[in-house]
Image 1: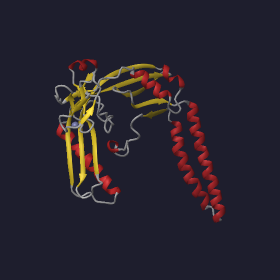
Image 2: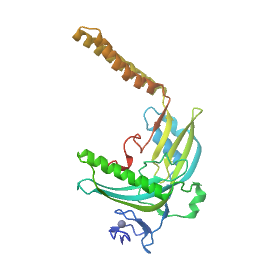
Image 3: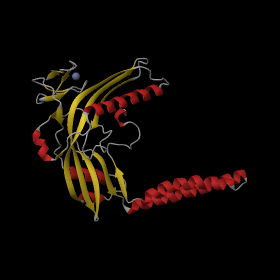
Length: 296
Ligand SMILES: [Zn+2]
């Protein structure tokens, strides 16, 4: 059926069975029949087993033992993390091409607040909050006031606009900003521990769709050896380049020049070779840059 958003009047289609819809244009979540809009939501947890999802993902990672799928899950707890959702729209009054439209979730509490900072939360799929879910896991109330979260969202928006303007060699100048509060969402997060070869490892899985947010796994010794061999290879290459350079310049300085960069490169790889655990994420590609505004 076709529905009309009570906030922005946009018309869009939803499946006939749906009772609660989220406008793809402005993010408003509303009841399709009563047009009631709420302020407190949650995402229904997936049916899949979080432990199985995690181990399967890890078994596909570089240097992970194949039998990790059979590891014993020793802890599996569901947490309801409070997140403020915002709709952001900003543009430069000077430059028409400098414009940002984004949805953003700001984690507001729980021990997992930092883990979920910058997390690309889904916008659609949330429904009105139901007290019954509280009993299914650990429930956390927001500790961060809404105004503070709004301020963080505003700063992130201005930063993104500034970045865009800088790319076009402009200074940003005056801006028009809209930061609209979409509600408080309790987001399901699985905290997991598993045991492999007598050692314990941790992992966090998105409770809505099973994305692995962050997890550690044991690196097989063959993978470690390979990394060490690569390190030796880099050292060797540096040495050869150094000899070539010293021959070319007729001085011993060239040798030093080759060995030093070779050594630096090798050190980086060799130190990875010693690590027995690796941390991976299906979602967060490193912590650099602004995750909120990465192009999809
Ligand atoms: Zn709308």
